[in-house]
Length: 200
Image (cartoon, rainbow, N blue to C red; front, side):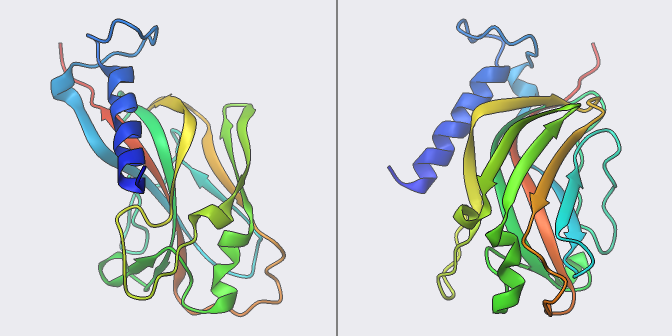
């Protein structure tokens, strides 16, 4: 099965999780199909520096908004997200408008995010741990694909815009002696089915 088909199947499962006409699900969060968007993405970015080998991407209620230097997309307070995949990219460029994203670093030392592990913290629990980040790295010359740097996660994770703590934590090896290309950012992206809040 191609990677495209794998992700399309994951998107379908995420859709069915939110679909109120799905008879098989026991999920309490249901959204009218007209208010479901797939594919949608939540993004949090942090600069890649030698100051720390642990980056914590905050997707909960304290998520930082986007800015000229951070291409952040957050979940609305009353929205629901079914997370079916994770994408880890390296962004190069001081501003969002000029940033180039790749599933590898421009130089060898810039690839250190792909030599670590990921974990998810949901409230006080860490239900997802030890995801090897090497599976996100793809370097294939000038050929780029929309699913570069992506991996499907199972089971699907469901979050609301009111969850206080939802962190994705990237633990890298020691970075204190490395020299990074200037203006690098680690872009953590959650691939989601988005259930938008509607007035009733």
